[in-house]
Every structure is written in structure tokens, then in C-alpha cells.
Image 1 (cartoon, rainbow, N blue to C red):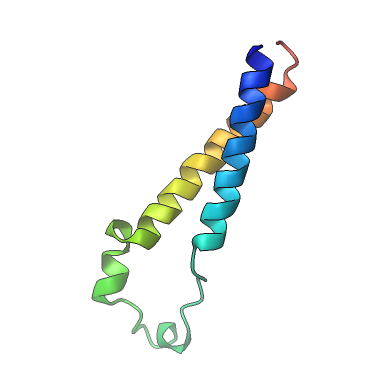
Image 2 (image 1 turned 60 degrees about the horizontal axis):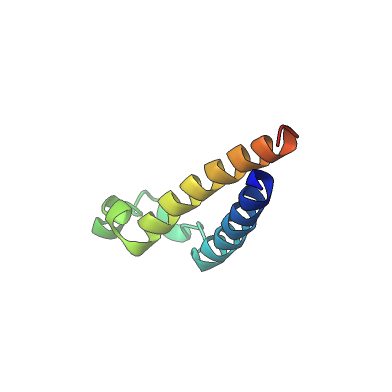
Length: 77
């Protein structure tokens, strides 16, 4: 029973991780980073933006993915 619940949660985490990764923008800075011009107001406050939340969500879901994969692989349940 516990294994089934963990498997369903694992599948939901996998789907959410795929969606969040696909929603993110590319990380290419362009030609502005060559001269050091890339540090703008937008770059400094990126953690508070939608993109910043997507990066944090990706990190949380990736850690949860790893933990659930390890737990499901233990064959304890």
C-alpha cells in the first residue's frame, strides 16, 4: 500500500518536474555578458521573479525526485 502511494507521488513529481523545466527560459546571456553589461536590475532581482520561483521549484522537485527514487529502490515496502 505504501509503495503504491509513493509510486503515484513519484509519477506526479516526475510530471511536475518536466513541466517546470519546459517552462524555464534559456540561460544564454548573449553578447552583453562579454563586456560585463549583463548585471542589470532584472538580473539582480531574478530570485523574486517568476523565473526565480521556477528555478527554486526545479531544485525542490529534483531533490524530491532523487529521494523518492532511492526510497522506491530499497524494496523495503
